[in-house]
Image (cartoon, rainbow over all chains, first blue to last red; front, side, top):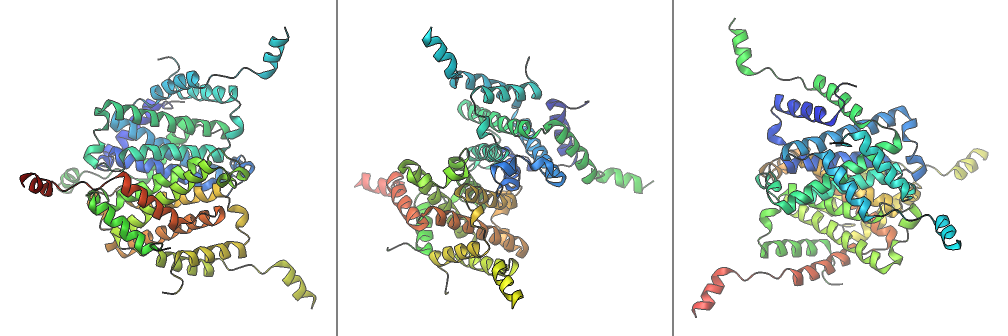
Amino acid sequence: MNGLDVQTLQRRLAAFAAARDWEQYHTPKNLAAALSVEASELVEIFQWLTPEQSAQVMEVPETAHRVTDEVADVLAYLLQFCEVLGIDALAALAEKIDRNEARFPVPKPPESQDRHSSE
Amino acid sequence: MNGLDVQTLQRRLAAFAAARDWEQYHTPKNLAAALSVEASELVEIFQWLTPEQSAQVMEVPETAHRVTDEVADVLAYLLQFCEVLGIDALAALAEKIDRNEARFPVPKPPESQDRHSSE
Amino acid sequence: MNGLDVQTLQRRLAAFAAARDWEQYHTPKNLAAALSVEASELVEIFQWLTPEQSAQVMEVPETAHRVTDEVADVLAYLLQFCEVLGIDALAALAEKIDRNEARFPVPKPPESQDRHSSE
Amino acid sequence: MNGLDVQTLQRRLAAFAAARDWEQYHTPKNLAAALSVEASELVEIFQWLTPEQSAQVMEVPETAHRVTDEVADVLAYLLQFCEVLGIDALAALAEKIDRNEARFPVPKPPESQDRHSSE
């Protein structure tokens, strides 16, 4: 499991781009566009599938490979975007979850309300 | 820095959806669409900016907040997508970087080639 | 029905942008990004709907208005993109349909094959 | 120039899908997704280009063909989307331009204001 944390992968991606002199292309604007292009390539796999079929894509090895590959591409561009703008993606998500937990409170389940009101 | 690893965040997102009975909406097809919609909201911030302006978006606090928020949304849907399909996003990216390092070898810098040819 | 042809609308859009000095923003790259952002806003309306619900969006006036508005935005950016690059969108589509008719021949219906084979 | 109006092309697309029994896949949700995928394929052509390079894509025949082809695909899915939901794309755009002309009034050019104030 060496190397399987976000910071290490983000550093590998930065070194990869630097070694190939690709940093000139990696403006935030271009990386956001590339991210959305990869996200759409993921959508393309599912575009004509029913909801049920979409839940079974990992059962066909070729499709599973394609889906996994697009996930890697999306994450790669997201981390490269964060790298050039100095954004901590994990901290951003943790804060967002905190805010969403306040914004969308868990509804009380109906049966416990019934039980409560009959007491 | 507790909780700031991908697995923990992915589990928090899964618990968040389960508690609100939102899992019914979280087909891989729908999550891929939601991911691409959030990626496009990131693109929208940059769509009329020059490359130079795009590199300065974090200097305006309001824009910085908006960009960070969209990064969180993209990562949230990517991890929820991976959750429902059982994909390890970090492993997928590590493998992709390995493959890309083989596919795009680092060009030898011209001066070292010169030095070599003069030996 | 005056003005309801593509060329007239494309000219109105070009005059609109010129009068507001917006042409400086309308690089093909930016217009393609804006087009994809508007297409994603259309996707957003449908992202959590079942296929059946998605077929009924025009029955709710507010949603119908939103869908129609996004269609207008997508077409607007598509025509502005075509304007700056000198592309005839209708001719491009007519040629594409011609090619697709050759590429995807209509399968003979099974019953006519049955009828034929029993003769 | 026969056939080069939107209604005729929209009818050809509808007949094309019906003849191949593809209507079952053409839910509004799927067509919106397909539209956004094609728009992203257009973005992909431009993603690493500078604004200046993006203005010259039609000078390379192969790229010009690719751009034109993606324009056709975007328009095809937009018209098929409009077909299944009964939306008149040209009327929607004409109304949108009317609204935008009211919403974004043309600024008076500075020199005419100067001239006026000196009278």
